[in-house]
Length: 391
Ligand SMILES: Cc1ncc(COP(=O)(O)O)c(C=O)c1O
Image (cartoon, rainbow, N blue to C red; front, side, top):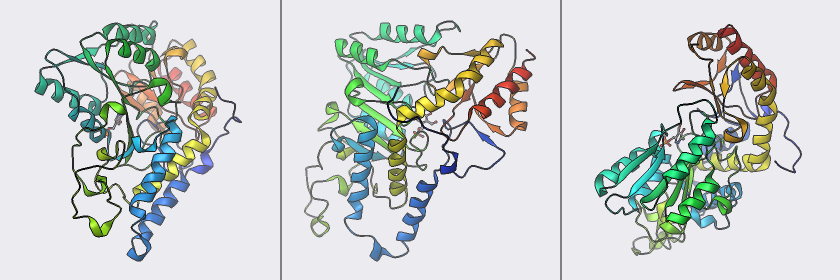
């Protein structure tokens, strides 16, 4: 996967409590120590406003653009903007799409609500159709079939394909390269919610060519809650943002001339950036987090997660538990389903009593390891599951 030196366990970079096993980065990441430090420095800076210059309103944001561009292989940092949430980033997308009557927005079943509600509103307001591609009701080649059905569902009526790179509940991997190709053939936009993948799974904007990529910062980007990043491609150049704030306008760097009101915006996609994005606490934290992710590299993180899960998952599968086949699931986020007829109730109790944090999403246990986890922790989880199903 990568030619870098393989990553070793990085638990020391975090302040996780001993005696507990956190396998739940898809819920919230723990804060790396260096991100925590950046936040404390941000708080302290505002003790004394002499320490915050006009340049600081722009500089950290620009550094975040550069750091996130590195994460996703983007050559133009002006395409990256700071957002407070995925719903905000997607509201800007939906605001700038015009549907003809009967045109479709295509989504996968049980997608995260922030990547559904904007489309529901759009189709309601503009006479479009929200088309949901259901998860195949089988455990056999489920991911492969789901991908095939998504490709088949893209037609000349499809205006937007809105997906994640992985499904947030069970890590099913969507083949965005193939989906992009099909969308190119039919002229659909590709809008990606990268919240559950970018940072831990390589994503290259040159390869996938999304029209927009929206990411919350508090999961796989290892940042704080309340700040994220979005990339907007050329399809959204010259669009209308959902809010009009001063700092996104041309020449906003000139604080003495702010009431020389400007019709023009800052370059690229900067018109879509949230007001007060200069946030002197959250922004330095996000920057520290992105730099750490880039240092470790998503490819190495993915490889590390693979290394620690491969043997435990093989043992689990031998006992009749279901995990998606490897080529159609992520290594950092995967769903585990019990053998037929086994409820998750007993597993839930055992997991809780053992101080292990995972999530229960739909009918799957969602396991989301990161570089602070170990193979030993995954074996512990897996053996409790096997015990719970009495197999
Ligand atoms: C796939 C996905 N997208 C988005 C979000 C968060 O959305 P928002 O930032 O709008 O709260 C989550 C949170 O769990 C998620 O799993």
